[in-house]
Every structure is written in C-alpha cells, then in structure tokens.
Image (cartoon, rainbow, N blue to C red; front, side, top):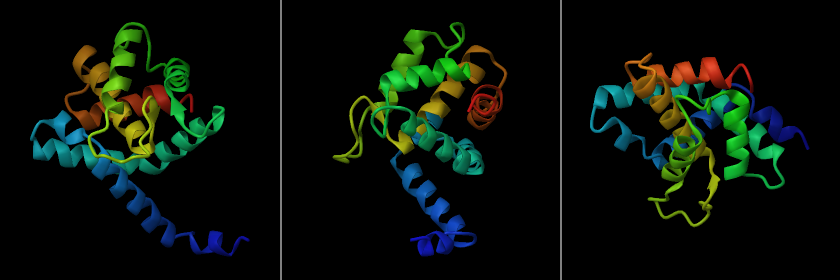
Length: 161
C-alpha cells in the first residue's frame, strides 16, 4: 500500500510538484493580468512556483473542509473572511465576488472545470488577482504582481492557514 508513497519522496516528489505547477500555470489566465509585460510575467511565475507547494496544500485543506471535494463560492467566501483577504475595505464583498467570478470563467474548454467551484489552478489565479487588487491597486504597498502575492500570502493567508 505504501510502496508508491516511497517512490514519491524527494527527488521524484520535486518533479511531481513541478509537473503539477506547469499544468496549473498553463490553464491560468494570468498572462492577461500582466498585459504583455514579459519580465513581470516571469517574475510572477517564479513567485508562484516559490510558494506553489504550500498553496497546493492550502487548496487541499480547503477542499477537505466542505461537503464536496472542491472549493465552492461559499467555501471561498469563508476562506476569504477567515484569512483576512476580504477585509471590508481594500477587498469588500462585491470585489471579492467579482474576482471569484472573473477567475472562474472557463477559457480552455475543460469539461471538468465546474462552474462556481475553484479548481486548483483557479485557486492560484484568484489569489494573485486578489493580491493585486489589495496590495498593488488599493493599498499601493506593492509595485508588482509578485510583490503583491508575497504580501497577501505572508500577511493574510499563511498566518491563518
């Protein structure tokens, strides 16, 4: 039963994480967010990869909290309030909901991408979008998407995850 578990330890686990990251990255719509700025796009990709395993673990934890193994709108709203992402000032309820909906729009044609539920790649993308709104656009504490994501993770998500 545990034979495969041993195979997935380092260094194979590193390849598994890298493959999962590449799959998720290819489905996100983050290239639209950076609007052709290749330097910023690469920097954001590097920042997400730096935190990817922990983000994936948070996503797994969150899908295990609900009645179904996915993060629905209500589950994500609870996550946003619990972590402090949805703070009522920089990120109010309307902004939070719009960002969820914008992220959840399917542009790749996967049939298993459920409406109103976040897949793993969408969870990564929504965190970047919310970080950008909160720390780059509203609070003006970050000058880049990567810096905004770092702030969101360190100030809001990790202390509560």
